[in-house]
Image 1 (cartoon, rainbow, N blue to C red):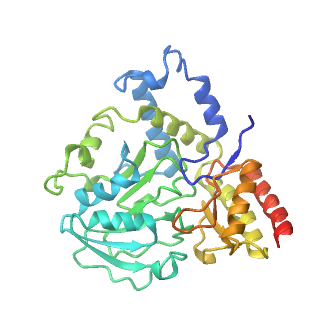
Image 2: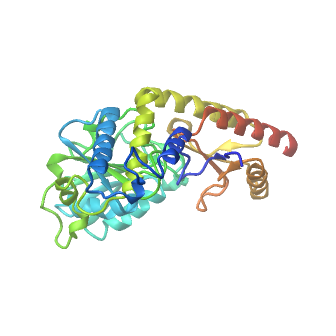
Image 3: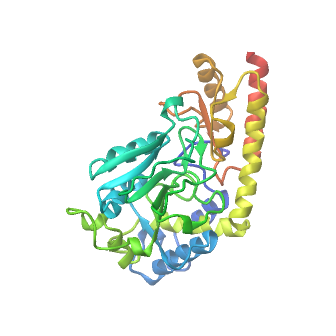
Length: 360
């Protein structure tokens, strides 16, 4: 069977050449006579895999020496607890609320201390990024928390909040490696791998060294201390070894294509094709304020639940998979991550044009 165009929000499309390389190495990785799936995480072969993965990520993102890179488990959702457990010294934090994932992070943060919602776009169903110009940062806040790109609602920060010197924490799960990032503006970045980097089961944390301490909230489990993993180079326990191996291949793929500047250009080109069509369509419309549109996740609707369902059904039949919108939003959503080829977006728009002619 031919490969489909997979517009899933995650687990999501991976580069074909990465999958082919992994397939070729499935039974025998680099002359070891075994798969990476079977390999000891204490072996020289795996130490090389995780070491190269970290170095390639550092190269691609230009990560300074005073930041540590951790390959962890538990996904971004575990970071909703791990961040306050490790960083909420005063038991106070400021959160900017832009959707489902900040809602969950806020709920988790409240277990450990006072969470102040200093800005929110809930009044317009999270279709925009709140005004960041007059934020009232709490004097005693330990950090300011944002979700950099909102997978469900399709919004993205194009500028960062002025945190008044407070630590900025960012969930970058759905736009990680999609464009250049100035890591020095953040105290901590985390990203679930399954959207733009690799298979589900790995979360990448980039954390400034001065934030890695034993001074964590009482009762924090050993496994939920950043210091545990930093001190052991992400090998305190058995890591998600195969997932890290695939992430490493994706980092090399990004490097080969020209790094994050080239990736941003590719992503802008794909997004422009889809957004230009939505802006000119008489049937479909995008749901996000133009200035805050994501390059990765593009939600759209027809205005009719019946037509939306018909569109998803017909699209699926011809090989456009996972276009149904999130249950909290409805409509459709095309996730066009790094590995989605330009051809996939062009063909989707051709199908949308045909559907519009037949249904308007």
